[in-house]
Image (cartoon, rainbow, N blue to C red):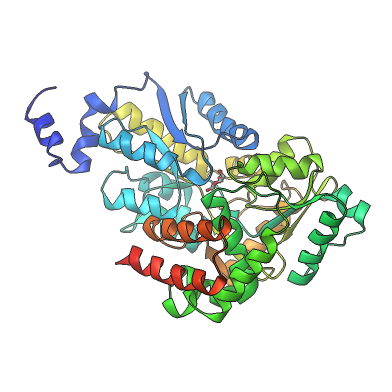
Length: 426
Ligand code: GAL
């Protein structure tokens, strides 16, 4: 189509909505009766959970074209998605996190899911902290898969028994137990040295050190007085203390390979979101038997959450639109919310479901998420796009990772963090 359309396109003059509505483009890469879904669910547990959606769609006669982009927390997937959009070849749908969903909605790129939401009573069953990101201008623009939370520790039960380690409840007990493992020749903390993982562990330390109010002040309100404070300096001190218990091969390690170290008994703990539990389950292990799950000591009174959202890109193809609606309906349905979380390691995002079908960790996680929502301590994860926009998140990643990979003093790190966040906001 070498019309003025392309000339305008080259000139970047055309609003996104028009780009996406040019069905000739939109249809290019998708077969008839098929949805193409961009996602970053490539680990064993993640792919298995995604398979549940593929199977449900197949039950409705809808084909599946997977568009996986490896790289935890969507670090690579969001770049691929942007390039697909700018080259006017959007997928049918994409997995995104909170602030990224809002960003695509602000660009008028997304199909409204209002009719599906109305039929599914979504305004009643999904909690406000989720609606804050899955709605835009009062309209539903995303289907929430689940609630994940990041302040979990995954522990190898037999190593705890072997070393006589009780579940730690305080930071000091936590550190002492990792020292015990290390002194016995094991790795205390399975760790993956990647910026999003550094930030995931760091947000745990901030919450454990300053508590829910401090986490909110620093990571959500982005208050410079909190970002460069004695409590933040203490958080970096504790982070440095914790990093002593990772092994030398941790730089660049993928999160699920760190989980595998705990599964295999090469490491005592991993601090990671409950997608890690999906790997234990995928390995056929049983919660509270083969492995333990507990909130990172010091964070027991709060939950740092994220939720994977499915956004649907605007197009003017009736069949694509109806398949998008069917997919949203499936994702938001009570049955799928349970099935998906049983595989993924998360808890349902819907608050109206029984936890009978959930395992021991998820039962506790589901209650904790509800209690936290009621007591205003269900707070967005910084590392997973629910505390601040991508620009600020990436600024935090930079400072935290340079701290991990160098010997920056804690007071300098806190000062740099405040400056980097300020810079990313201006
Ligand atoms: C998170 C995502 C999870 C999990 C994790 C690791 O951001 O919400 O579903 O996939 O990344 O890749």
